[in-house]
Every structure is written in structure tokens, then in C-alpha cells.
Length: 102
Image (cartoon, rainbow, N blue to C red):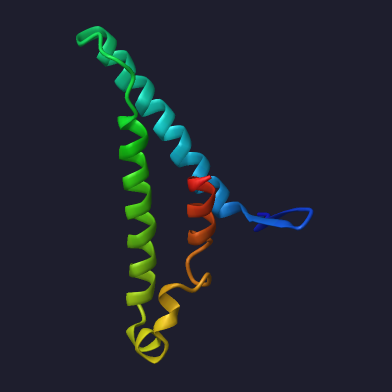
């Protein structure tokens, strides 16, 4: 496995890239299904419910995974509360969030 892609000065963690790619693919598929069902039933305009649902679920998953990792070792959290925002411990959660929000 290649843990990082180095593109000039930019370093992209592959885990975050794959999480973001999966979330975007799920959002596009869900939105396409919503649009198909909407045209069959309501004949109304285009909305972005699929992206909202996947975005909320993706953010909740990242936050939940981060909290689980931090609460797995409470002594470390009590000794140094900055581990809540640390890049280490959860494979690129901040990077996958950044890729998702771009």
C-alpha cells in the first residue's frame, strides 16, 4: 500500500483520498436515484438532498471514529487533551475532511 501520494509540494494521504472518493461516489449515486424518483412522482426541480445526507453521514462517521479512537485510551486523553485535534491516530481524518470540503 502507498500511504501518501506526493505531487510536488502537496502530500495527499491515500486513506483520506479513498474515503472522500467513496463519499462523493455515494452522494452522486444517491442524488441520481433521488432525481429519478422525483421525476417519476413529482416533476419538481433539482435539489441536493443526496449530497446533504452523505455529507452529514460522512462528517458524523469521521467525528465518531475520531472520538472512538481518543476514548479508547482515556489516560492519554486526560494527560494531553490536544490529541482530540491531532492528525495522528486516525488515518488522515482531517485530510479526508479537507478533500471532501473542496
